[in-house]
Length: 67
Image (tube, rainbow, N blue to C red; front, side, top):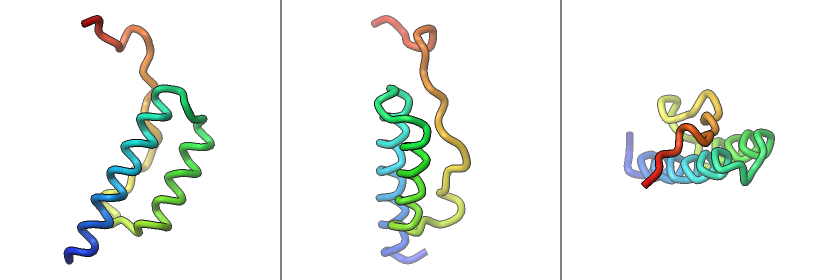
């Protein structure tokens, strides 16, 4: 992997992490999440190993811990 591919994978990872967070917080729909991931794949052309195959699980109240 060259430096340019590494940078694309890193940017893809950051973009998908943000999309996943928005989806888990229910700020975007599943359809919007899937659309974003498709756009990111076209834009960043990540390596096969860095692609995500399924949407993140939404958190629910029992998963959240009181601080």
